[in-house]
Length: 434
Image (tube, rainbow, N blue to C red; front, side, top):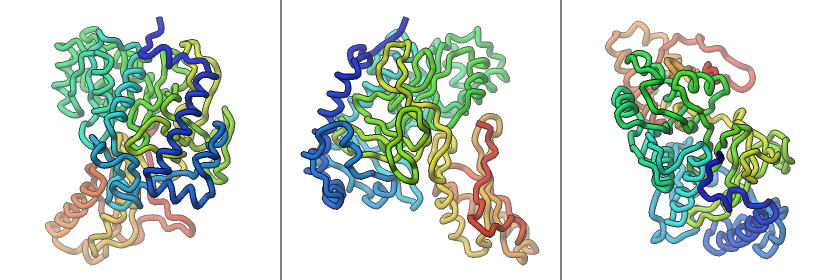
């Protein structure tokens, strides 16, 4: 039997849904034009006025928004609501050391809670569920997003956060946890620790898991399902749009339903920027048609996928997005954290004794993402005292870890070790099999 949280909205006939989308889009465009200097300037530059939005297809008349726009307007320049109405800040990392800030009104928190409640229900959760939230809490949206959605659904919510793995396994058993929310790599790590600690799936009451914040494959899904004895669902979101809960797989797992009454999706060609039709692979773009704190027009996510409008057996009428297959920029997702190579480069080059040649190696060890950075240093340093080399290594690890909020290992190599390129340097080697 299919679970719903808001059946009338989730199964709304397309014609009615599209009328609602247009109404909300028209209100949104007028709202940002009047209340956000950034959008008023962008729209004036492109010669479009709120009154020009008469049909959903008129969406393509509006300007795009990029992550660089958010950086350039740090911290509050993208807000449309007055600061007195902003009740929450979340943020993700950026390339310059400044955070990419997202502001939420109470209206936005309510929307977020609602779409997350819908998402949990789509995965089979209900008021009788016991939800263990093992995403990180704080500026990262994962923990609080899942937490608020679980509470909105009426489920018993455990704010476990990440880490303390042995304790979490004990809670799984003692608290009779039914639902796990975390990154897929942490789910596999939990599964491995379960085996080490002697837990069997029959000892636990787990039924489903909502996994996101990093890329993962069907093979990872099979491993998680086999090792934890659950059904594993792919959840998608990003802090700039709202956080987790933008889309979710239903029980049929044939793509992730986008909650289109709140997030208007497009697929565009990443180079020509022309809209593409259903089934065409391209860059995913969102317009947030109900947010008030920091609504976005045509936000370029850089995620590559396609949209599918085939009817789903679950009865939901909202279109599905396929699994993300990559990105149109150089951003890495490491353990759920956005990392740009340029962040690492900036941190490395604060130390004068290294050469301007480095390589970032990303791997997955015991189901957790790891970063090693090979760095060329001056030849004379290798003849220096071991203590001095170790101090330099520690300083670099501290600088980089502080810049990207992830622990890294530095490995010094001699000059000329890292392969040179006549074209664009190969800065990143991603060995993860995802």
